[in-house]
Amino acid sequence: MTKNVNFKKWLTFVVLVIGGGTVFKLSSLKDAFYVPMQEFMGLTHTQIGAALSVYGLVQTIGNFASIYLSDRFSKRIMISGSLVGIGIIGIYISTFPPYMGILVAWGLLSLFGEVLYWPVLLKAIRLLGTDKEQGRLFGFLEAGRGVVDTIVAFSALGIFALLGKGSAALRGAILFYSAVVIIIGVVSYIMLEDDKVKAADGEKVNKNKLAFDGVIQAIKMPEIWVVSLTIASIYSVYCGLTYFIPFLKDVYGMPVTLVGAYGIINQYGLKMVGGPVGGMLVDKKFGSATKFLRVALVVAAVAMFVFTLLPHESLNVYAGMACTLGFGAIIFSMRAVFFAPIDEIRVPRNISGAAMSIACIFGYCPQMFAFTLYGSILDKHPGFAGYKMVFYLMIGFAILGIVITTLLLKMIKKRQALVDAE
Image (cartoon, rainbow, N blue to C red; front, side, top):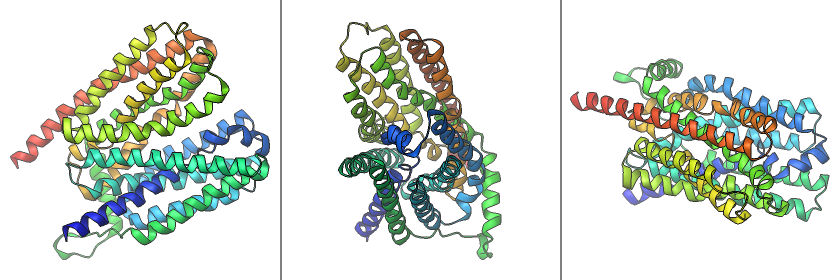
């Protein structure tokens, strides 16, 4: 019986991971097809940036609604419906719609992916395991997403090359992304179970009231807000990883042929390394995601400071790549588990969705300002001086994270003492 339960749990986990690795491929179309989007869809840098801004705006506003929605409706419906919806939007994008259509499409991709899907996926992952398994579950979620990301991205690139690298090839790659996400949506509907909602004393279940009560309960937990700030500090450092690519190109003279490969490793490959390492360290070594995050933030701050002192002008490009990828691995080990503290603060499982939504709102909010902040610094201060300022900012965010995780550990200790005393 136990073997059957474990098999079903891990099979469900695999389905969730595959969904998590495909859901954002269309909204991240620029990662692999930035130049083809300009050439064949007629989009400028500003227009692509505006589409991403619409995406972020919908995500931020929509996540307030997801505090309620993620616990109101079954994860089976939310996850499968969101995936199929994203696939349908992808089919529309493959028609190369006008600019306004692009803005609407990216807004809808954010609605289905960030608002309706992502908090529910995190909730589903949390509910799969015990408090002793949270690190490895979230760690292997990130690692698994990295594997799926890489396979799907390279498959799309292969289709693009096979079809001649023209407009039809871009359309074929987009349709490939769409087909994959729709198939996973159908599989998710078949494999996942509906949430079982219970009311006290045999009362009739009022899902609206239960969901609303859960929202109020989650909002009143200060620990959830501190976890959100922890995520935000780490995500602010994570945003800086994007600028390692132009840094290596401008300062180290990285050849254009290496840029694409480095970008894929930097954004996808590191998930496969950092995810399981972070997860296993949390569960096996530290016994606490928050303790691990504090130590990792200290390591990140020191590593980045040392990096700023290196003689970059005399190092070769492969040394620069190794240093930046090593730092990236540290950040990805934290990204993999920065939602795990939700379990440490003893959030009731029936409000997991609301808690994850709050964490998403404020944890991911740096994407609204960090890229603009880092980019404006580089525009105003060309050369290594600008990059050095960006790196110092990343150190500052890491130090802020150390302060926040120290506060969170005190709050966790206090809450656990109260629970033990009851």
